[in-house]
Amino acid sequence: MADSILNAGELDGVVVALIDASLAVGHRGGYLECAQHVEEVFGQAFDISHCSVTSEADAELARTENAYNHLSLPVIDLVAKALEHDDWCKRLKAILDPPETFELSDEEETAGNDGDGDYGQPDDDGDGDKHDDDDDGDGYE
Image (cartoon, rainbow, N blue to C red):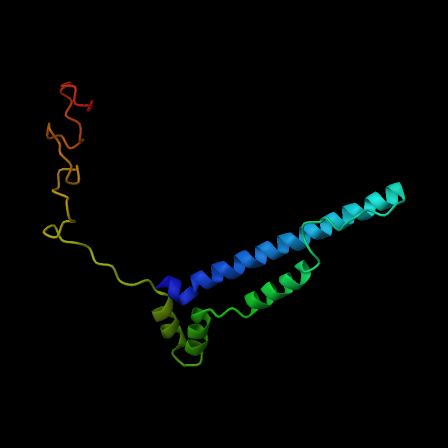
């Protein structure tokens, strides 16, 4: 349910794209700054054409920032709709409270658990530790 409310897959993809674009712009900016220092020190033009990050990086960063800024998170819409009503607090609690959980009774044990501590695994000596402790060479202590 949390994934559908938070739109987690889309959110992850947009954040990753934003990080990648930011790193590319930072890399290019750092590279160009270093090139400028080299030009100043040596007094000659430095060839920046072999920089692995193109000048398109700024445009890509702008696109990813726009996608991030316009990302739709359904939970925000739910909260905004809840705030429009007089009983907004009750509505928000209904949206944000975790679902009720139920405890199993003694008769409703989980599958494979026979109650001896070995969770359904063989236990040759009955002490619940999954080891037979009898030094018969079967690989158990």
